[in-house]
Length: 613
Image (cartoon, rainbow, N blue to C red):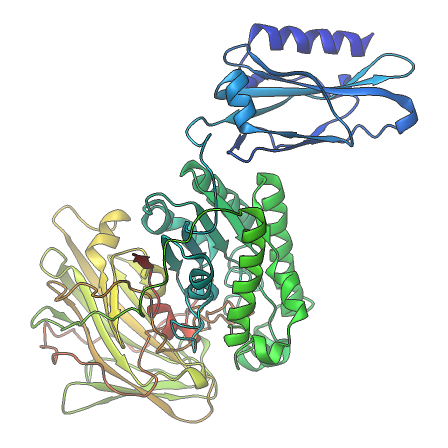
């Protein structure tokens, strides 16, 4: 009797057209559940498989049918359609033709050979008419590759070797946008979605690859930078945002690491009580698989595919980033999947030539942030370092920073207590030389404004920043305005700066700071057909953490991409601005803070690369 009443109630609700979002029948009145699609899922042109777990023996079942109705209009798109094998494919085009776009509800009925029929719970979903009729082909598509340095570049790989370029050769894209930022976690990636992904007109596919920095353990911490639950929420939000663009989200799991090499970069004392870095990374890959299944999104399992490749050819010397073999493997694995899943279409042409760098000239004037003799302090042990960072003030105005530690991340601090007018000096300019990827070098800068400590590696990628061979420009005013960190008159008090230089080399190692200032305007915008970076710095994933390799974050800062040859980038010598006042020589270790560093030089090497023919 309960089953009959449940079916009667469900049928009445279907007939009167109650919105799908409020359709429900108590679980105790249903013999089984619809397992996909997920509640409220939006369908695209390809539709999806409706599946359920009725769990009856075949000899008990007479027949199985599904009813699908537009809850907004009352029109049936499928009425008593036969189902076999516990699933039926639902076509968006078929639903649009029969019932139109809108909110839909589905219910499965299993007719038993003996006894009353059994009914599933109701499952609501949506059909978006704006994407119906749109066909998806990987050949000639507009693609966004979105993630960290495993997307951005390969640290030592140039434009010709990066997997996104190799895909372009094979599929002749209309456009590919490299929205990878070294050192990014999924949280940071989600924060820049509108700027770097949603802004791409006519995107067909968004390849999503995050996780290598999420799993990383901050210095002094015992848990990853982004916990599993937050990671899954971030990925889910990305999938929803991509679908809202009318594009297809395609998740790509992370490839493996070489744990023996990994431990050399991350001493045992920085690793929490997990059962190894690879096991921790694997939990994030599994989380991505689960989100993809929940969203009905495509998943390319690079974590599984990479097992067929030799690590010596797949990975670079750091045991994390992609060597040429790894780039080729990513391109093949992604390409093979997409070619089979989204065939057809026409190639639009071959990739353009390698990108050119902008020509940046640092303007005169502004507010100088260079270390100052007699003012800048360099205490031993800042941020937990086992040594100190010693500045040498050169006659040409540059400052040599010598890391006097053993594989550590010392810092220097300069106190100011002065007002900065960001209307007059909106851009942060800085120029570095000497960072070396073979030492896993990294550099980072912390700036405290009105008591708010900002980490440069977190800001990069969220403004219209540009770079040229070790010289970088960041729109600080834009960042401060967006984050409500600037007063109405456009000013803020500069409290202090902290510069960190990390290296995994033993003994005294130096880099050179050529310029650092807030100044009026950028002299030049990027030139050439694109802004895909040519790796010149260190760790491509951007920052190396004290925990597991975050494809790039390290215990200290992350840093500025520089010319690994040690040559100084072409700049105009900076003019001196206001002199900071003397400050104390201590800086308390801030609990829970992470100096993103290490291989972070590459963090600044990579910005969104958009190539349109």
